Image 1 (cartoon, helix red, strand yellow):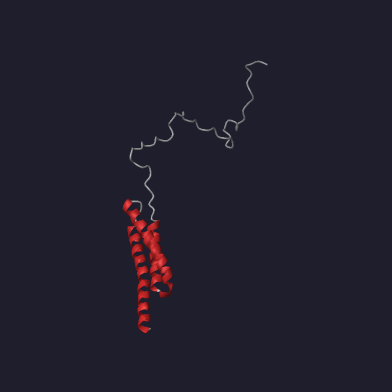
Image 2 (cartoon, one colour):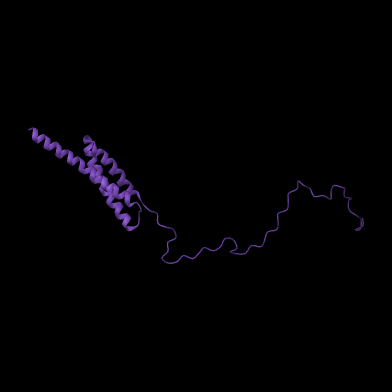
Length: 140
């Protein structure tokens, strides 16, 4: 055979591309080092990366203990719980007010309200007991 013999004849449908064939991937642009994401901004000295998370738990605990202690103080027969919850509300309120003054919390109103409710919740049973003592002294 000679080298100048023509190849096999193409049919009328072979010149079209096969629609079910795997497409060729597009050409990838050249990859340069550092071409992905932009560089992070510089961190300045003295600036924090993220703001500090506020901890409002003590003020909220003071408010809850103060309200429950106040309700227990209004009902005479729960005066023991009122005194215990009043003490806890005063402690939590004082700690919460300290955190607010340092900028670690932002619920100063809740801490103050818990402190006041805790004080009132402790004073009411004392008033009840003083009134009961005066009533018993007048009878006997």
